[in-house]
Amino acid sequence: MKSYRSGPATERIEHRAFTLDDCESFYHLNSHPEVMRHTGEPPLRSLMDARRAIADYPDFETVGFGRWACVLKDTGAVIGFCGLKYLPELEEVDVGFRFFPEYWGQGIATETCSACIAFGFEVLKLDRILGLVLTENKASIRVLEKCGLTQNGEVTYDGERALKYEIIRAARGGA
Image: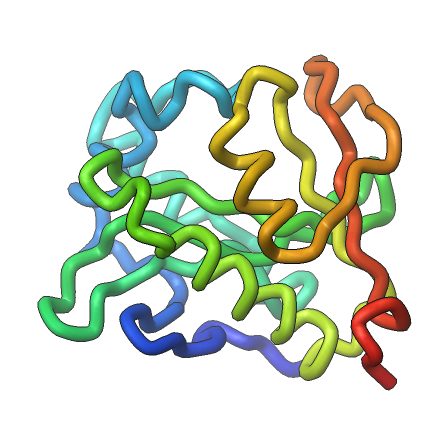
C-alpha cells in the first residue's frame, strides 16, 4: 500500500503529515476553545498530549492517508489541518478540517477541503466521501456544501449526533 504523507497542494496551502516539529502548533490548534467548540472532541491538555497524538497517529501506515497539516506556502506556518480519515466504525472515509480562527473566513477551508476531496476521488479512487458535522457548526456545514457535499441523514459517531454529508464520485463526473 502506498502511503500519502504529502497531500494535494493548493494555491496557498501545502498538505503534509504532521511531524514532531509541529507539536506546538498542533497543541495550540487542538486546545483552542473556539476551534474545539463544535468538534465533539476534548481539547488537548498538554504539549506531551500533542507529541503523543502526532507520534501515535497510525493512519498513513494503516490506510495510506490521513489528516494533513495545512502549511501556508508563503510563510511555512502550520495553520490547521485538512484531510481524509478512514472511519472503521462506519467503513467510510470522512473529510475533516480545523483551522486557527485568524484564518477563518478567507476561503482556506473550502480550498483545502475541495483539494482533499479531489485527491480522494482522483488518486485514492474512492467512490464516496462523507463529511460528519455537528448540527450547530454552521460554518463547517457551509464549507461542506460549497465543496459539493449534500446532507444525507444523521449518524451517531463517537457518542455525538452528527449530520452526515456526502459526495459521490460518479456525481462529480469521476471515472
